[in-house]
Amino acid sequence: MNNDTATVKKYQLNASERTFPPFSLPNLLTTCFGNGNGERVCVLIDLPTPSDIQEFRFLGDPTLSIQNYGYEVFYKGFKSGVLETMNWKGGEIFAYKETGGSNLDMEDVCFNPSGDQLSLDKDIYTQYDIILVVSTFSATAPLTAKCKEFGFRGATLHGLNQIILDTGLSVDYDYVSEDAEKLRRGLTCADRFEIDFEVEGSSYTLVLHTNGQEAQKSHGLCPPGKPDVANLPAGEVYFVPESADGVFPFKYDESTIGLLHVKDGKIFKSQFVYGDYAEIEAHNARLADDPMIGAIGELGFGTQVLPFSGRDIQDEKILGTIHVATGRDDHLGGNITPDLFKEHINASHDDVLYAPHKTPEIRLQQARMFKQGKSTVLIENYKPAAFMVECLESELSADA
Image (cartoon, rainbow, N blue to C red; front, side):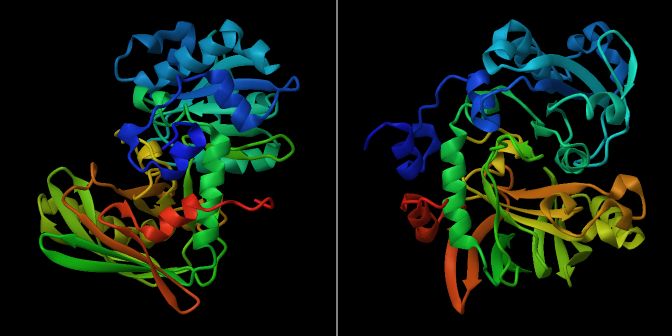
């Protein structure tokens, strides 16, 4: 087998046998955003106390390693010649208050390193053409809404660590986009998907109805000409289910598993399997108080061959994994918007990832697609089935 990038991507299904090129910030940004033309760019980070960006006080906090990457890799990278290489301007860094949840709306207040209090709407979104968010909590949903309002492009890179830099952000996103498109075409217009899980010797099935919906892809490309936000690392095919029914296991923490019961597109109760019963009770109380937190907002399939990083942002993009998300899905083209939730803090988008390193207690027995009266196996035991591999090995026509 050849060792060139295209061949490895098409045929190499073992991430440990892949050779990744060294991380290059200019390569990543050029591939994702295209050649520069004087655009203004900035970096946003989230902090528990955003004023701690003043004189970069946050750099001394070992719990803020993600934000340190935002400073060291992106901000300092821009100041060390990457701006000129990209033909971009600016390169400033700002901090906003961490939201406390995945894809919750961001507060408008932010700060610069001089300690000045600014407004995201007035001072950032209107002044920059490209905005990169390096954060603990995903900002994809709120930033997507803002990019449509203000017309900028951007990328969200939450949960950064060294494994992600060395692998998921080192790949060629033209190839990532091509592979995602191959799988998107294979899965698009499906009527429904069925996922079989096994936990504690018993099997359960979740059925997600897509009713011929056009599949979407997260591919990492955000070229000039259209406001958009890329989620990096990218590499998935996803749907916004129109409904869902069944039962699927949920791992609350390392010691607690529950069974989530779904009807008409919403989780309506959690059933105790083992662990801390108080967690199950707390979840059921939240579902009773605000049923929208149980809304199924996404079904996603990973499309890349990457090592597991321990962070969902990369691990949900790995071929053979599946994620089911609850909560808002307006950033994916769905109709579950923040105003439908009882409280703002509930209006998150939370991916529930099924992957061998994260949910070893839960066996993903099989995932099937039903399309035009035919059933096709997609995944078995966290491994892509023949259909998925055949899609990746196929040639993509020129109209991709």
